[in-house]
Image 1 (cartoon, rainbow, N blue to C red):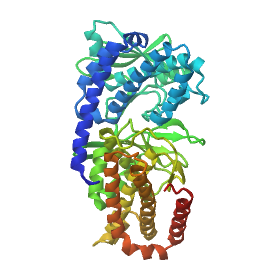
Image 2 (tube, helix red, strand yellow; image 1 turned 120 degrees about the vertical axis):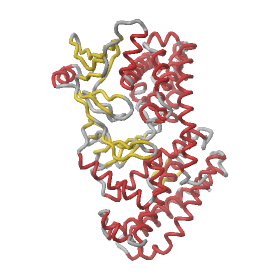
Image 3 (cartoon, one colour; image 1 turned 180 degrees about the horizontal axis):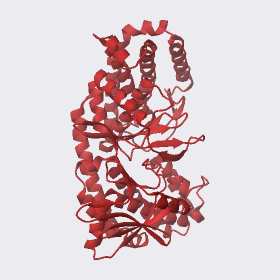
Length: 515
């Protein structure tokens, strides 16, 4: 395959959907056959989870929300198994040490470690109680999210069980990972939200956002303490008592809708503090950025349409963008501290993380669980583990492709007028040329380390080596295209910055030479 072959990615996406459907079935079977006590202890409605899974379409299984829910359920299964092991151990020191090490390897994106090892130490005497509390919290969160994915179906399930009602603990504070509004219920997979009326919001604030869904055959109420508040009633049609907020669709494509979500707000300490509605002007900025990508780089635009389904604006000083492996298609993008060129770059950057994560679901690319931070990152300017270097090299190669296409787009027939209509200045063109050459040098630096990892260290698998070879081929093409622009950048206001960057890479190679 080539890096821009969307047909191969379409096949991988189909395989991914089938694997997630199979994973959900396997998880349900495992809970029923091997962890019946945990199912009872944590109140896990496995029959309901199975019914919910059967209601999903094939496309739903690659949706960021459905895939994330299944991944969380799989995490819970893993930790329930750990909990069973811990209960059977009299001396828990060794298992506590092993578990803490696994957090660094397997759960580096999650906040799980803060709950089980809040002091950063094994603390084996507290391990059992902390694991139990953690599993209970995760079970509540998973069950709440399952109801929100299909609330009417949940009512039908209750009716089918012959029950009058089902109580589901819920937390309606802002959800920072899914980027969902506080005092609201976000239903389905499209981003449709229902916001509680003022009296309910006041009650939720007094209760610190905690309550219970009372799921009945006829609808759902929210219980807060001794008071009940109607949420939705189902008859011939659904009647919601809460105000609905439609998802904002940025564009439709052959792969579905690209939706703009609420805004995630960070505090001064660069941690999330709340979620707010997104201002309309952000949607206009996003649409302009998407239009430029579609015009300048059709192949990259197709990959973006295939892999990114939800964008959430990020208001966070000093934080550019991010995404999660377990929430495929969800990109958090800083739309406040970044200009037009940065916004386009950030969209492609996070989409490239989704791209590599999809490849990694199909093929193990690095082996032996090496997590040593021994490879210098030209982007972080610090030592990083192999997986970090692989992700960075992949995403910044795609970034270099983007900048090369933007430069070529401007240089083509009628390109100068297009460039101006897109809101770009002559200085933006200089910066695009510089950014392309800067990324070429950085990627070339890390490709040498990846060659070493795959050759001498044997840390890359065959699949990993193939991806690195494709990155090298892609970089060579970009370099050839940019040869004529080298002198322009040297004479521009970015010439000094490029020379400093190259000198810094040379010093890093001397200092961190692994050969």
